Length: 486
Ligand SMILES: *Cc1c(COP(=O)(O)O)cnc(C)c1O
Image 1 (cartoon, protein in one colour):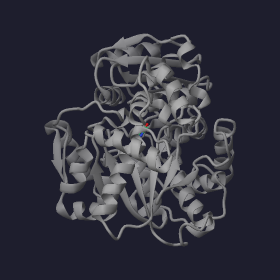
Image 2 (cartoon, helix red, strand yellow):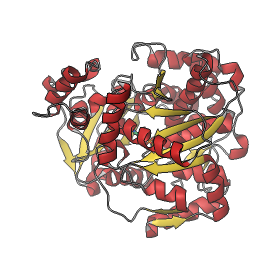
Image 3 (cartoon, protein in one colour):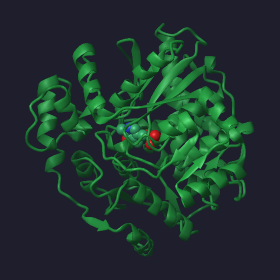
Image 4 (cartoon, protein in one colour):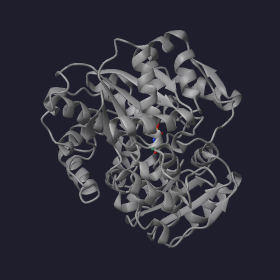
């Protein structure tokens, strides 16, 4: 299986090359052709542990990695970083199940992919015969940055630079990043929002070629593949515990920003998982809700800063992969992406929209609904969830009402509530005062839910990174890094 560009104007490459390069030379995203999608028999996976399921999925989607190698790398990536062998536990909460993806070293779901990506990338570079230093560029809305820094720190032969929107991340997220240790890490604020940071990074990829740049964002297929695994493991877990009949379709509700996590669910379905619908949950930045309902993607709208900042995104990069996988038409995708760049909007053909709507349902939830949901889930079900998960829970309820013949539903939980303590504490009725760090302690006192160890003591750690640039200065910043041979 080769990887091709969604925009059709780059040569096909091996899976290893796609992981090393991140973005295709024509500006498109590397993807498999829909006709090449590998199929797996989910029945075989039911009795397997997480690592074995991971080995099956990774070697099927990235054929340059054997099953044994994939298993070995997964073990090295997760052992000691996740508290239990079940990397992503599925827990019953009320009439739904919650897939907890936040037990990694930075308490956000991105750990699941970003602990593994450095191992995949090192090995992929060796397979390609690349010997130079790889420089990872990452734009973050808050969680990717820390998870990538933690995953890539002190990995020989790799440097990493993370760009975050100066005023667009929570105090906890910022503290996590600016206190990051490691010889090869660079953290830089951008005077703009996440879309400015992400567009800046994409521009740099377009203008600086052949210097060993790669991406840890979900534009890299190596980020998406590890996320396919937990859709299968959640299914297996529900079947094993008797909560789902083998073969019955299962719906997933995914709190969505860049459309990476939910796209991994789509890929799981295409690989043979008995998937019902994927419910796309957005906050007030509801560009995807409108798109999935109308077929028109229009980013010309006010950018809202919400209580679920990791979803404050108006340009969802991975939607491009879905458009290609569902249409198989790279000329169409290239033309839509040109319209998005030039006019800020595009409309897909109605036949494509209908196809998309057969698999996807979409809804959104504002900050008030988010807080009310955190409160309701806590007070009535004794489950403490973060703001992103609350958006998904709220939209899952909207979906259940709107679609009476829905299937059992899994809500993906993407962050620990302690990453967003101010909103969660005030939602559950705790006394808010002091800074976010004091609120973390107050949240623990109020709820009795233990704070993750990695967030304890964050405030006392020294700030090691003070860089801040305008979006237009990002290229120069990266060129400096490339010159620096240390
Ligand atoms: C990144 C993130 C999301 C959105 O995931 P995408 O793959 O970008 O759609 C949701 N919740 C949290 C907590 C995140 O960090």
